[in-house]
Length: 126
Image (cartoon, rainbow, N blue to C red; front, side):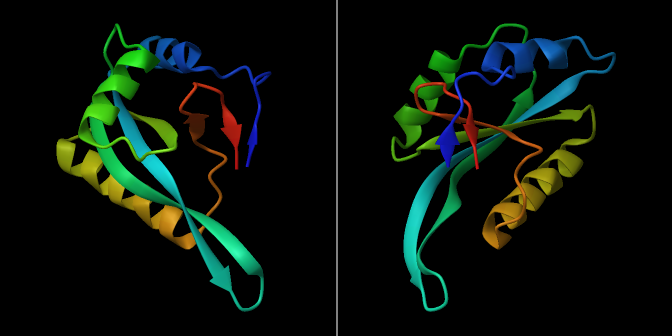
């Protein structure tokens, strides 16, 4: 994992791009922690595990600091925030998408379609 401060997709850009879409958006959030474990084939391994996952309608005003404060109030063990957006859909479809994201995390799937930040709001490439 590496921090990439030069990355153009910063938090507010991501939010504004969602607000510019012609249909309302859901904001999908997964607060992640790193689990360290040993693998007989590969030695020391790390995997990202969801600590908390939630969704909300994309608000017109949202700050990264406010998300951090709210998440820390619930559980401050998270290390990364994974973000995604989804076009307007029934809440059941949104919850299914969150379950799909959890499965992607569990299987070590490619996460390049997501925007991921560390706690200091630095974009991270995994």
